[in-house]
Amino acid sequence: MKFDIIIIGSGLGGLLSANILSKEGYNVCLLEKNSKLGGSLQTFGRKACIFNTGLNYTESLEKNQILNQYFRYFGLTDRISFRKLDEDGFDVINFPGARYKLAMGHENFRETLLRHFPGERDGLNQYLQKIKDICSSISLYNLSDKPYSFFDNESLGIGAADYIRSVIGNDRLRNILAGNSLMYAGDRKTTPLMIQAVINNSFIESAWRIVGGSHTIVDVLADNIINDGGTILKNSAGEKLITKNDHIEAIQLHTGEILEAKFFISNTHPEDIMKMLGQQRSIRILAERIKGLDDTLGMFTLYMVFKKNTFPYLNYNLYHYNQDNAWVASDYNPSAWPQVFLFNTVASSHAGYYAENASAITYMSYNEVEKWKNTFTGHRGDDYLRFKKEKSESLMTGLEKQFPGIRSCVDSTYSSTPLTWRDYTGTRAGSAFGVVKDYNKPIESFLIPQTRIPNLIMTGQNINVHGILGVTISSVLACSKIINMHDLLNKIRNA
Image 1 (cartoon, rainbow, N blue to C red):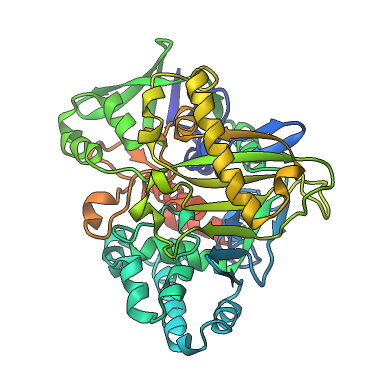
Image 2 (cartoon, rainbow, N blue to C red):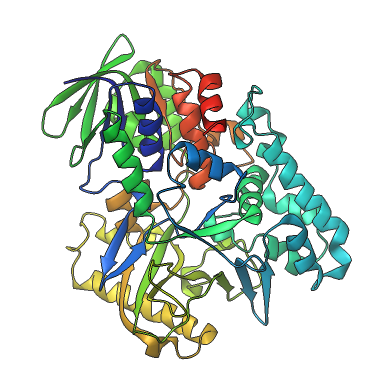
């Protein structure tokens, strides 16, 4: 079979790229090795409740905000329901002895924190102006035609923790500004200011939950691809890329079937695509560089189904710390587990005052589950089940301290580990956010879409900035290697 473009991997980056290119009239084929599309947008159901696996809330969806405009172009705003989180505290950061709210809107955000830290007005003003300036300098954050070189941005080589320390005097406030760092595996030793700025600024603009689960995004994007003449092949794992003169001609699937195309876009982990290329001379240096990159920590998630009308729906996300340090990824300690967890109730289409289900998410190192690495979900044995039960109990104990009586509200629980992420999203070592972006070595740790093979392009969370907005931008960048960027941006602006 022959196509114009083959996209490998159906995570958000692959789905968006397939949408853009099929809309432009290209004959697109999207390959997914598993039976479900969506990568970390996948959901699963238990007892009539839908659980998100990766995307629990998203950002900048108010009218005239950036993700809203992208979503309008992709036909998502009219077909998906969103629920806005509490404007006066969409995230609640809980340290020992005190809780603090992160509010929407830059002024509201600042004034809410000044109630606790009245002497930090100048520092907060500097911080908020800095993150706005960084976002303004990224052309695709503003749908600007201005040429943009990713590596020209100075904030790529500045540590987020270092910058916050330079403008904020109070140590507790420094940690509050990094209080949702679990959302990007923030590490004070590596995380660039750019990552923190793009993510924090976007959520300060507005924060939302997706009603009915993140799979609704997948469903709409998949329908768009099919309606525009594209092809989606599930259970179709690519095994080998067939090349000639440093140019890819085809991909061989695990079934032996060979699919030809003019262009190939990879939405898999970069190391996987390097393995599929084999010993290509042109990518040998890149392959060694990717192999040497670290991955972010994985996650353990406890999923809870509540008894009917027992636990209230919380229109905010709680980040709880058992220590006075928000940069847990830098100092992850299994013996103090869980050092932090994110708790949120799920926005279902028919929930009112009471929540139907919720999840609690915390860090987990792949080393803790590595002894089961040669198994697959559902077939890991009793030792693994006991391990998960022990971790679930520890996490539930922490939840009980924050929400007394929650245990009695729970009807049933389920859990996942980095191995689950590895199996269902194809991430190396079950990493939650792909490769570590390191401000100490930005050129080495940040990957760009275009590779040395002219017709091989990369997209997804490992490219540039992760998160739903970051992946959207990386998809536009990837597609701009095939279609005209100016024309595409005009269509997005006018959607």
